[in-house]
Amino acid sequence: PFFERDMNQNCLSRSKSSTVLCTSQTTTVSPNATATNPLVRVSGSTVDYILPYSRTVKFDDILPNLNATWTISGPHSVYASYAESLTLPRTDNLYTVYYDTDGEITSPIADPETSKTVDVGYRYQTGALIASANVWFTQFQNRILSTYDQDTGISADRNVGDVDLMGFDTQLGFAPTEGLSLYLTASYSDSEIKSDYVTGTDTIAVGGKTLVEVPDWTFGLRVNYENGPMTFGAQAKYVGERWLTDLNDVAVPSYTTINANAGVDLSYFGVPNTEISVNVINLLDEQYFGSLGTGISYTSGLYATQGAPRTFQASIRYKF
Image 1 (cartoon, rainbow, N blue to C red):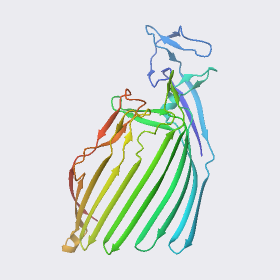
Image 2 (cartoon, helix red, strand yellow; image 1 turned 90 degrees about the vertical axis):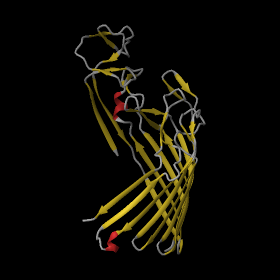
Image 3 (cartoon, rainbow, N blue to C red; image 1 turned 90 degrees about the horizontal axis):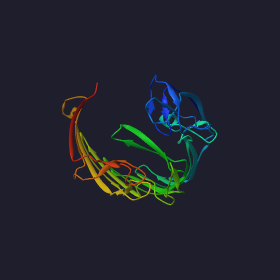
Image 4 (tube, rainbow, N blue to C red; image 1 turned 135 degrees about the vertical axis):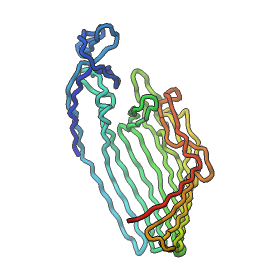
């Protein structure tokens, strides 16, 4: 893939900030200006700005993706894959600029996030049973984390450097009798930020810490039963503890939620193409946190959104 960003900033930009000033006021050279840092100010202000600019930023890479599967015999097979990926900085990040030591305009988060993933697994599949297990390892460079700011309504990104992620996943699908199916999943993941990183003039001691929002264990169970016009189902989900900060000084606890559903096809009772369904979200009314607003430390303006309480939904659907 290859990408090109043609950027034209017609306003004044505050150094290393997303703040801009769009004005027709005359600018003067800032007292802090140097040959490689030509900052300006507007009348009556002590804030330094970068003059309007145009620049082009290009990204390209070669991303191999290799997959192999070997059917050992009958229902048994093994597989392996290797894949690389590229994630570009958001355009907003590229408009957050400053002058580098050569006097060129650049961005704090200018480099793309790249990853390399190796995945090896085993699969067993018959008509009534499918089971698989795999181990994986992902190596990130320039790992970019995005956090939504509830007060400003925008997302802010930070680069935590190189990160290693590894774990395993297992799945089991089983249909013991006609109409009844079960599906189970279990996953474990471990992560490590490889070294400290610098933000501004501060060194953030995160080397060896765990990546935010990544639970160690997750489990899932889904049971579904269909008999004539009736459908019944339930599913449970467990999510382990998750860190809120890069420094691993604040975490949200693990939680388990259970959802249930039931439905009836009214075409069995003379009403064609019509279905009624009832769903219960968070059946046990578990108190838990869903989405997280992460940060560097507990002073970073963190937040965690409360998960949905017990909720009942009923709907009728007509097909035409």
